[in-house]
Image (cartoon, rainbow over the protein chains, first blue to last red):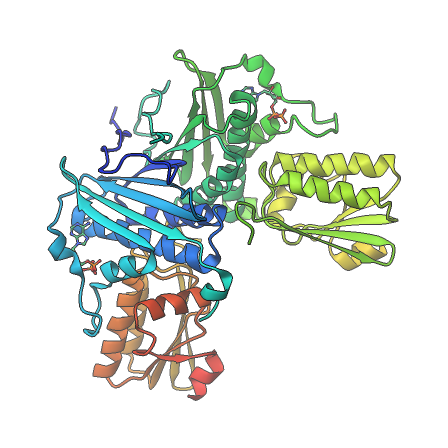
Length: 165
Length: 165
Length: 115
Length: 115
Ligand SMILES: Nc1ncnc2c1ncn2[C@@H]1O[C@H](COP(=O)(O)OP(=O)(O)O)[C@@H](O)[C@H]1O
Ligand SMILES: Nc1ncnc2c1ncn2[C@@H]1O[C@H](COP(=O)(O)OP(=O)(O)O)[C@@H](O)[C@H]1O
């Protein structure tokens, strides 16, 4: 009997749990592009649950998507059996959502993660720019035990601001 | 600094991983009604990923919802900090999805789980009937280590059948 | 959109009929809102109540229970309750719960108002 | 619905214009399908290509990259490429990527066909 991929405990993070956010959902997914849509659907609904509007929810889901896409493509080199851990929960001080992402893929020098210059119109290199721009807080670090950790936070923007464009 | 709820390893199950299904997503959620919508969104997208049509996906998501609702209300007595583990992945032999649900709530005599007679029109007691009817395979057991384990499986019905009504 | 809940409920009157139109998925977290809306409407003793379900793509057993309770309330108070404009998913859920024959179902709102 | 993919792409012609209409979310798993569709359309050397995005509620950077590639292809082959009917979400994503000024955007399909 073949053993399927089993859940493993998430690697321990660089930050400790705090009064500023409370994880409500912990996930472990395999590094497969087909799982991006399910995770996105969950993210949008979690964002609505904490009070983010439709556009803000979409932008947070996009930031997470870009992080996962990079981990799948660059971190795990498109191996379909890598593990990715995702944690989501409301921020305590504002209406907002915090997402923490961890992998056990090869870690990379943060200087390599700049992405391309936007003036240089060509496919690729957009992911890092989008992630940085789409959320209020973006952190990206190598963990001492190997692998990476990404933090994304987005709070509710007042309707008047977010509906402006 | 207050420690938020941390992820704990899922309790070990009664069944072993097999060639017949492959878990792709492992989740741990807190026992909160507000998390039903995010889990449902994820379930619908996972069902679409394995090829279930819209109505079948909705029925599987409903069966999961009923299981979670019962665990939240009856198992954890509406305590908002209980843990529920959910595992999802494609079936190997048919286009379908398997979902496994575990809790560490008080377990219950399976005879108590009958639900009400459908002829008796009153609110409540519908959940068990729906769960049994909505999926192809429904298993409900007490684990030796305490808590319950529920298995739900649903395979794709041919379009001609599912669109008939 | 109000934080945490994405069920919105509109109540309007047309002649002596009160129409309740929930918009969003009805689950354990949201059915109390629907229960309260319908109870409030019944208290005003309208001649008829129509529950327009066109905006409800999903309903679980707590939603079904809410509607069964409303039906019992309507019988006790002799206020006819009609459901109209069910989405295919909600219709299929009602059928599986074998409640489709218990409620008075109308295809559209016009039919419910004239029926 | 085909298993695993929920992106459907319709290709039609109107006069000398070819219109490509994807329906669904475009992410890393689905953008290769869109890339191939557009490449096939370009190969037939139509006078103009319109990408109707009314059915695309979401697009990630792999979708954007696909469109940038299509634009480069269109410039090389001197086949004008127009995007029309963007949803508010996709428009906002294009703006954040600062690609809204790089592409020719039209409000509706009619405008794209006459423009
Ligand atoms: N998780 C990761 N692991 C390893 N390398 C990464 C990771 N994320 C990004 N990178 C590196 O950073 C570069 C820029 O990433 P990005 O802006 O998303 O553009 P793209 O992925 O299209 O190249 C990538 O080409 C890759 O070399
Ligand atoms: N996870 C559970 N833990 C404990 N008791 C349960 C659980 N699920 C169901 N039950 C029992 O089974 C009964 C029938 O459940 P159900 O058909 O869902 O109807 P309802 O929840 O509306 O009463 C419940 O009233 C409860 O006593």
